[in-house]
Length: 367
Image 1 (spheres, rainbow, N blue to C red):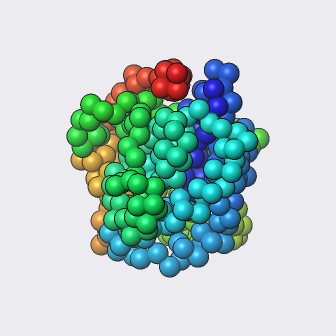
Image 2 (cartoon, rainbow, N blue to C red):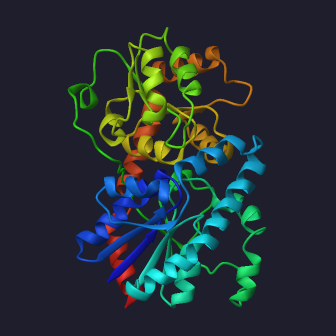
């Protein structure tokens, strides 16, 4: 069986879909992963075969990030427009590819509208795989500004529904129970590097891992978070892309800064302090590590459910100062209930069907 994955336009959905794509390949299926120009090296770095579907570079992404609206609702609408525009750009290249390598099934991320549209056009089943816990419906208003002309041309009233909808959210954190969604155990994947002992072995001090995600083009927020916890007696590790890590190393010479394989590091951490990023959140959940969340914007509702569950502290827009961040981390370190709740969620995730079982369902779909 030939399976085409089209996860999304940043490294995070690529990494989130990787365990399912790898499971499919391990069962003997042919797997290709489509992505914009920026993410092609990330796809290759995790051992999957990339194909370019749109000429969107890192510079293009940086420009969008720098001009995106600050208001979460307007930001989500802008993201929805971008994903819909990528769908329009990528459909012709994908259809040309299908003339020579026709997939038997198409797997797409929650906002990558080109996946169900391509599957519809080819007459093959489509699978939607959520890559984080955020409800992608918030992006629909933006997409609705872009997609209608194509939908009308193709005789559609809306983007086709998937034949299989895969959800990776732990059941305790789901806002509602949807019987039409198939649960799957989420497993972390990311590019690797030669490991050093500090990455997999915990030191004497509590460890706080700080990140602001892969789509980061300034180290200012990371520096602020690191300085906020400097008086707590903790070991700090900052995960950052190299484009911002070099300057941070000069500014914070006593802190480990750079790309760290989080699947290896996370189990050694006492807190993961971050921006509400989907894969960071899921990796922390998988490892059973409590979180402190700042600057969450679009992800606020999903992150608040985690905080309400007792496995995280989420800081509001007026609580982003150093004192509030330090206080939140101190509470998590001092109160064992945060760790207990995080570990319970990790155990819950471990009981969900593994990716190999989802591949078996995909095989039945494709006949």
